[in-house]
Image (cartoon, rainbow, N blue to C red; front, side):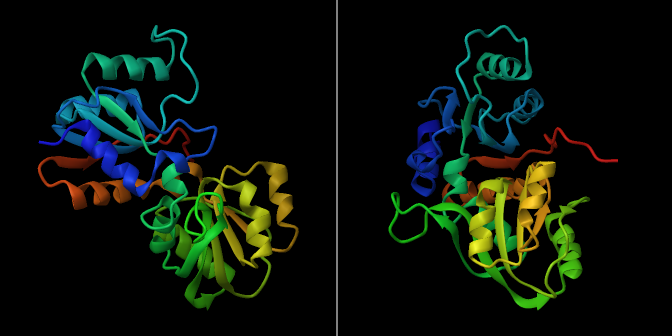
Length: 265
């Protein structure tokens, strides 16, 4: 039976911690690296409800995309959802590991490649390569690629809703007759808009756009905000596939809990 550190070491061969952004807190957040792994629960957010699910399923390792802790905790009194989650995990000997922007920033097996695959993009590459980390252009933020057959913008938006299993898309003015070249960034990606325009993408798919930021499309591109949770939802399946590829002696479960804090009417 593998230990927590064996799972961590494997994941970090795919997405090394050195690839995470400076603000991030990827890595082992709670738990003993030497503990034996009974089974794993995979999620986007390691909330208290997810820890309850891990207890019910007999999982002693939770692998989340988003870190439950971003900055230092000065007390653990249970006054908010972060502290409640950490306390419950510690009480029940459950380790929490986060694989966040380091998984965003890799090409193969990364978050944005999973989005590209979900919507059928071909000839994909990193949108904004980090040449300090790799001279090959395979490390960096966002991705860009091509549809096999260009389609009208409205047909593409309908297709996008179907492929990403989403209910709502916020989008800017329709410009251009066809969507052929598509840029994506899971999570908050507004910082990549200028790069998407420079690379002549027809549409940029991301999330967390503020009202005034939509004006930055400037009739040069379509911005499609599909929601943060929605843009990264398939990361859970991605992680399950990675774990199952390497480890066959314990179960890897996808959470059944929606941790999306946003509701739609």
